[in-house]
Image (cartoon, rainbow, N blue to C red; front, side, top):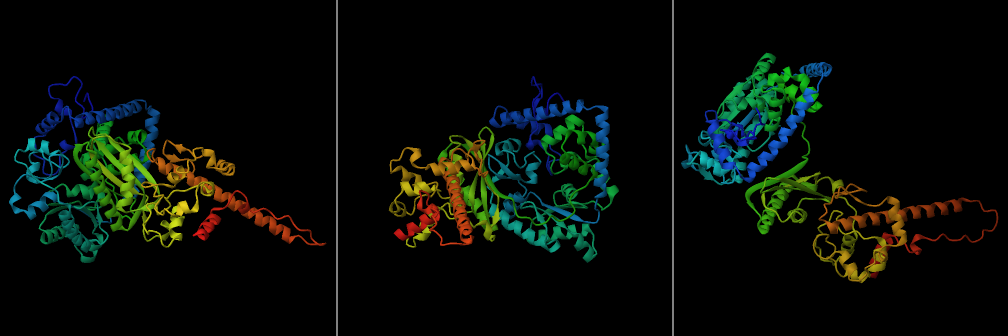
Length: 629
């Protein structure tokens, strides 16, 4: 081909749509008899000139660069290089072959057109009609009747209507889908209590024990399970049975809908099965990887991966090469993965492109509520919040902020998310998402134990205070250097306003400082404080958002929080200095006390405590504040 797949050939050509490949043109189950060229032409004509089309062109240009780079690398390989990598590949394949496990029986089940099937079950009048669950903006699922026209999931609804003028749309109802998903999972548990659910409508089951205990085959289990699901839900599913999860998933797609395919636990049967299998059928090999393998090395089937093993080892990373060779050998996971704590929880929504800020913030609030609900259901809190944005031009942006404490409520999440979104405004968006990572279980006390801040201390020390929970309840309130407390604030001024210092909204302690009309920074920080801070090194923001001292992340839009964070490090350094001074004083006094007395001792000059100098420790200041109450 003269141009990378997905990019119209230079000069146009008589049929430019023939080389225009998107996710919409990749065939799904039920689309086998579709006129592929007709679908490509419709998608090309309706996309041409759109923001989506322009974004696809940009992405394909990047893919083309990658392909050209790999071609150059491949051309530069010498005979010695190829011989070396052939040995490397041979060794890898022997090691992988030695790990082959044919003792397990895995079943992959996939509900048939799940969302559409649920809607048809709830409304029988939809039966037999070409149905799309979604909207004119995006289709979530298409029924098998609609797939005959080339309509499929992830396709804009207006393109679906062009392909199928009689297409019927139904709005998604995820509560309904979750209900039916739970019914199917109750059936799965009978065969494998540790089944792996990958979505609402897919799951992997290790049926090895069931087959051994009941003396039945994997085929019988698949038939029995599919029958049980239909009896209890009224829905159909397809199943695949194989020695490992990777192949079982491929098998479940062969006889869709409402069918099954069984691959025997035999090495030759597995190698024969994968020999002609298109690489795109394998989970983990998408459009870009497929293009690179096909256009650089001429690989289109799994068996060809073994034939080009030396080049795969030479051009790709070790991990990628191992994966490709495993695919060629028909190897996949056979052990049930250990239960691990989730690394992140996320949610996102696609909508019609809009630049209406009020509407965008409304959608953000809904996302924050959904994310908070998911976190609380799992009993988790998180520290790193990531905002995902897809602009009207299909540009994808991600912005993240790391909190000092663990949060999981809508209010906390929304405040951070709002800050992140405001920093990007104005812009037109078509998708927003929120992800919480660095998760900790709420049962883990160590994850929530944090140092009290000044503002929280003032509230806790005053039992008659408002009782409102500070947003920065986990080490997120304003931190103030010791000298600011002593020089610039009266105790009455601070304690009389127990709601200050919420860190994001309302008046901060810095605002209180400004009412004293102290404009010179030298008035706020003593020479001692400055010296202490310099001992720890100057605090900087690496790459514009990473603290050079602790690695804490705060984007440039968080000016108040950045100042609070810097104040925290200054207060921390001063506190450490006081600790060192106190230890030195105790040490000196101990040594003097241990000296033998040969004569009447002369009065020793009392060492001056740091409490008597300009530097009053924070703890002492707290005590003084309490007495003044």
